[in-house]
Image (cartoon, rainbow over all chains, first blue to last red; front, top):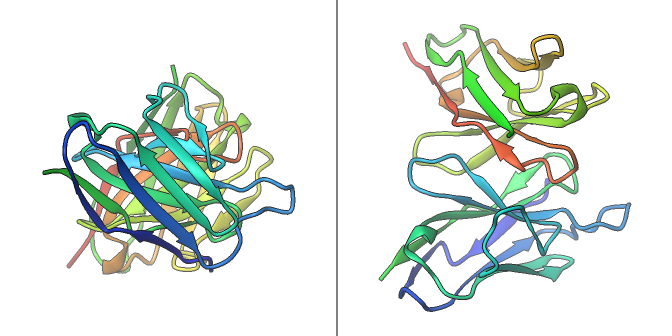
Amino acid sequence: DIVMTQTPLSSPVTLGQPASISCRSSQSLVHSDGNTYLSWLQQRPGQPPRLLIYKISKRFSGVPDRFSGSGAGTDFTLKISRVEAEDVGVYYCTQVTQFPITFGQGTRLEIK
Amino acid sequence: EVQLVESGGGLVQPGGSLRLSCAASGFTVSSNYMTWVRQAPGKGLEWVSVIYSGGSTYYADSVKGRFTVSRDNSKNTLYLQMSSLRVEDTAVYYCATAPGWSLFDYWGQGTLVTVSS
């Protein structure tokens, strides 16, 4: 199984400041079709998860452009350019390149 | 507008069975990838199962042989038949869907399954 490791597990951030979450996979996420199926999900308190980013860097419909994804191979990053109060929650990276589909442990973003 | 509404959760004894439903609107379940993901209380996300538009199904090892995913195209509904339930199956179960292999474009609100004696 591909293990997804996120750092940090908790990130206190000041409103208006940037935030960054890293995700490392135990093996390459490059699929045989050439795509890299790495996504980022946001889960606000008491809510279901929500797709933010797919295929490393593609923002899903309706996602603010302050969210961006980058990376390649086994190392990926989610960046929030200026954190807003509504960004509080837990962020998960997930790989759908290979079965079983796996998730990172989650990173809790909180406001200082 | 895409909507997913899960139902069927509840309290069940270990060894029991339960069937979850995920009623879809705004798209056709037979045209999309349909996925079940669960989240134990206070824990992270765990993939459970996926059914392809073509009907192929895949399962996490933790549920293989005990859970079955299916769909009823006439009702535009996804199902998860769960049997031989264990205490560790206690979780909120979400269904999710996508037309492509991003899998997680849209999510339901979830339904809570509690396995306890």
